[in-house]
Length: 303
Image 1 (cartoon, rainbow, N blue to C red):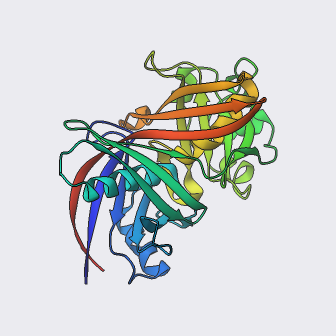
Image 2 (image 1 turned 30 degrees about the horizontal axis):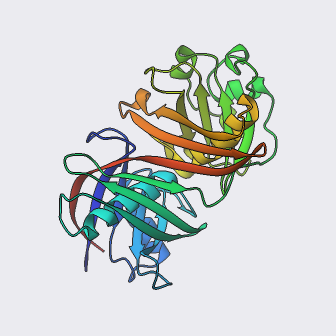
């Protein structure tokens, strides 16, 4: 049996940048074990399997796999799948319009707004299905530095300190002093295993205020070796949880705040994640993630 698939680059307007994503359509005949094997074959950060929705009013049910395991939610699969389904359902292949794609994910219902314009890559944006919350504490900065190939003085800037936040899935958020320091960071085994493995974390999201582009607010890297992802070019789920970090340390006042996160530069896959936060009465009320997605390839896979 053959199933159609598409490969997209997500959080970029240019092919061969951003975070690559495989989307396998018509996957209702596959069980979880077969999906996991196919995800390992694609060997991308995530592979999405599209199934018929359980509720007729929704667009599709999706299951998301890394090369090592299934996850209930992820940002770039949500953006990429939403953009792809909007394009495939558009009345004109290169038409203009807006679409609402409603995805049934493991975390719950996720609504994705997609903007289609001739001559440009589709832009998709979704409201986070869960708001970020603090998810515990992290080991001391000196141990985190050892796990990331850094020295203790390179951990932290301004009032930012390491923190553990999640919005369905938890990440270690590690502020790094400079662009030079974040550029030399790496997973330093066996320190990583002793410090971060077994902490119920997706991975470590490193960020600094210095950026490669003046339009960006933060420069980031994300390591998730426990999920089979040595480094991720763009991590939308981490950006959702990162909203909690920004709100906490930057003291956002009531109103709407937009931050651009650049990621993937050290991998040669520059990505831009748009993070929008609405603060009401001193609390985060809404977190929104947006970005472009570009189709790169399509075909059929023997299953």
